[in-house]
Length: 332
Image 1 (cartoon, rainbow, N blue to C red):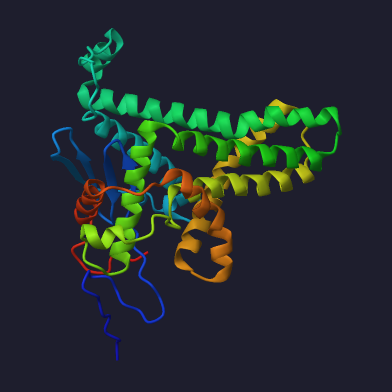
Image 2: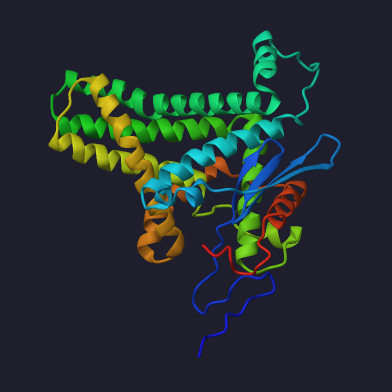
């Protein structure tokens, strides 16, 4: 006889000894939050007048058209690129409502006007979004991969040991990553974004706990979530260290530019492995998982702050808009 699945008051499946985990997740924006569910995406932004600007859309996944893109390792690369594009698009949308003190609305440049005439408004927006993603990715690769590789050459003055060079680059990657997050956390504008990040995490936790989505219930939740983008980025750095150490131990590469190109070639594999690890860690709560995810949770001290009630309201609204109609279909 088939066992009947029970649900709590929020529609989350109940399972003895196992907490419910949702695939719903989000991203903090400028005075807002983007949430993505199994089939829907929402963006909720708090406008200067206090009202909420809401954008909703149905999600279409490329893996539904090309199943091969949903295979392990490959799906991580596809998901990462999709998240980057959608994240930048949502950020640009939220920026439209950000107040600019003492600044008048700027006229589009001649290039922007020409591009809009040639491509149309939607295609022009897609062009600039794609360009922003490429530039952002290039800056990240330059900061977290090229810079450590170039700085790591300094160790060759002391020793020609490949192990020492790998160790130096690894330490530099971690130090640059932590320093970057710490610097961002002290920027006034980013503090509000990171507070919305905290609201997003707390709202997800409240839903996973099966509690009604109220400001009071959300406020009590922790702000550090194991399935966070910060944790994922740290995992990319950590796995890149492990993979590059093994590769360069087998095939030593001394030239800095060739080493960087090798790092670049390994990046898709590293992203794919990191994604699979996050999926695995998201489904397990054992002691090993807690140890492996602890660094990523600690780094969230830089990228999440306690939100105020108005931010929590935005998180609740954004999540409510993407919850599935069929209970339990968003289980992780």
